[in-house]
Every structure is written in structure tokens, then in C-alpha cells.
Image (cartoon, rainbow, N blue to C red; front, side):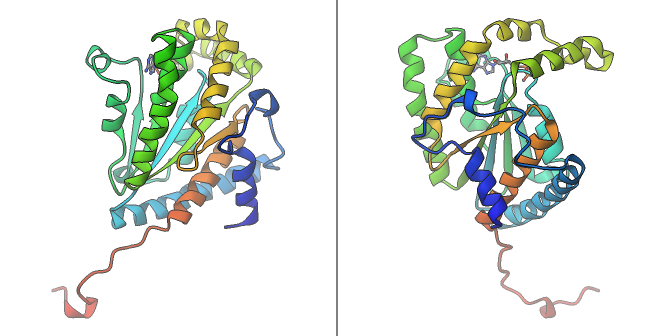
Length: 274
Ligand code: ADP
């Protein structure tokens, strides 16, 4: 792997056991990518590389990649999916968005709905929000008793370990935006008629709890970044930096997985197409 990729992953990853502080990570960090036009072109090329690697993953049919996207409202989860996976063949990708749990889902443990949405072998699964909501909104809005929330971090680590041991590589990205950037993006949703549909008054309520969410994110990042499912903190105020960083890490991870086209038991010369 290129040194540059290795450095980027190291810079953005939360090392297991590290005490990551969001205040120390600049959401407007421009140092990791230099020129925006060049970076955008490189990201488009990476998206195509991801498609080629995905084709191999699908043909191999024995492992999966799970990409988990978390971030406050307007942090760009939808935009990331569009920007990074736009060239990937739809056959091999599933996207699952997690909203508030249904009545049926609430009648089960919090991971029940998640397990069913995990990618099948040969595919890339993308989670737009995830089981981490249960230690984010769940914690901030006190949707469950404190001791129940407390137990969830280890339950998540054990669940993800089980997935990893069964052939699913897991990448987790926290899209880190500043409060000022969120203000601008929310205002845009009010000002631009084509974005009205994205505006949800509930987002303003969550914005009032900004500091509580930042704290809940920090706890989650520190307790659930594991060797088998690492968290990355992505500077997300600039969309092109966000997409470039995530595309680089996804591609490097797929390259490391190195999926192989299966061997066939026949030789092309054995057949003649008539
Ligand atoms: P988005 O805001 O991502 O475009 P939605 O408005 O449909 O999508 O749903 C997201 C909402 O669902 C968020 O407010 C989120 O906090 C909430 N949500 C997701 N998972 C849970 C959960 N496990 N418990 C409570 N609320 C959840």
C-alpha cells in the first residue's frame, strides 16, 4: 500500500485504547488533501477502483465489507454514499438507513434489526446510521436506563467481533462537522426549495443538545474502536475532503482483502460457442 494511504489511515483512525478528543480533530482539516480539483478527480478514479474490487468480492462470494456511517444531522452521510459508491455496481451493494425503531424492533434487543441488515457474502453493505444510534440518541435522549446504555458498548464490540470472525470486514466512519457548518447546512435546507424536503424541525432540537452529542460520540469512539472494527474520524466540513478520505480508506481496505476470482474446473479451450 502507498505510504500516503497508510499515513492517512493512521491519521484518521482512532487507535484502540486511545483517548480521542473531537476538539483535537479539525473538521475543516485541509492538510490531508491539497488541491480540490485534483482531489475530486482522484476520488472519481477511486470510485471506479472500488467497483473493480467489488466485482472481485462478488465473484469470490465468501466475504463481505460493512461500511458504517455515523454523524450528526447534515454531516453528509447521504452525500458520502453518492460520492464514494456512485460507480459501484448496484448488484453488489446494499444501503440500509436506520430510523427510529419500529414497535416490532423495540420488542427485541437493539442489535436484532441490525444483524438482519448486515451484508451478505460477496457484497458491500453501507449503514446510514446504525446500532450506534443506541448509544448516541439513546444516551442523549435517555431512551434507555443508564446501566442498559452502559452495557451496550461491550455488546456492540462483541457483536462486531462475531461479524468479523465470520468474514465481514468492518469500517466505521464518524463524519465530523463543526457547529458552524451545521448551521449553514440547516439554513440552506430552509432557503433552497429543492432542499425543503430534507429539513426536519427535530434536527433543531438535536442541535440544542450539540455538546451532549459530541460527548456521546467521544465515548463511543473511545470505547468501540477495536482492531476488528476501527473508527475513523473524518474531517467533514469540506465535502471533497470527506469523500476523498473515505474513498481512499475503502479502496485500501478492499485491496488488503484482496478478493480473488474463483478457479474454474474447466478450460476455456474445452468449449466452443456455436
Ligand atoms: P436522516 O435524518 O438520517 O435523514 P430519518 O429522519 O429518517 O433520517 O431518521 C433518522 C432519525 O432516526 C434520527 O433522528 C435518529 O436519531 C433516529 N434513530 C435512528 N436509530 C435510532 C434508535 N435506535 N433509537 C432512536 N432513534 C433512532
